[in-house]
Image 1: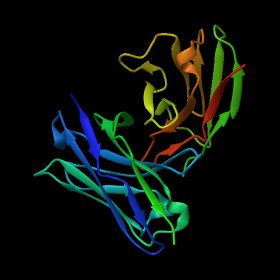
Image 2: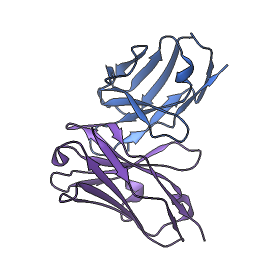
Image 3: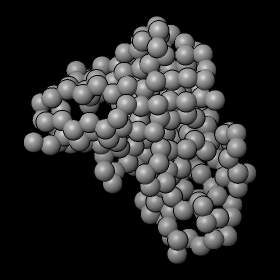
Length: 119
Length: 107
């Protein structure tokens, strides 16, 4: 069965960087892209960006351009999201999600990784 | 970016009611729209994709319609398990966005 398992919770200080991993299994890794979606406490869902696992191409939300990088490691079927220059408003639950075949809906999600940014 | 506006933001209803949630896009997204249900502390669950296609395993009381800039999610007969927050998401072009969410509460 398709599984996306994310790394554990992180506590960071303002200005730090964080890297969250999303290890996938149960399907052909190269056939589907992975998106990252975050949710601040009590708030809605925010699409952060997407990576083509096939060729490494990325699309990032404009508000995060320059601070976010998504990469993949095909040898371990793992996708990574790095966010730099963290601020308090980056405190959120971060989810990875697998897209549909050549389509941008998300039927499979990771369990979420809480990133807390506090001085 | 394409903006999505959901209405209402909060909806109070009773078990057995028929409810409709609307999602309006700031420009046409054709039929590239999905709907999700989210419960507290859980990841979102896909309900509908391509505006009106029901995801496998989702009860048939959920349905979606629309195209272009106006879309609706309808629950034909509310069940206790349906009280949750619902989000629309557009996936037109290369930059995707979610609506702000509609919280469905028990009246």
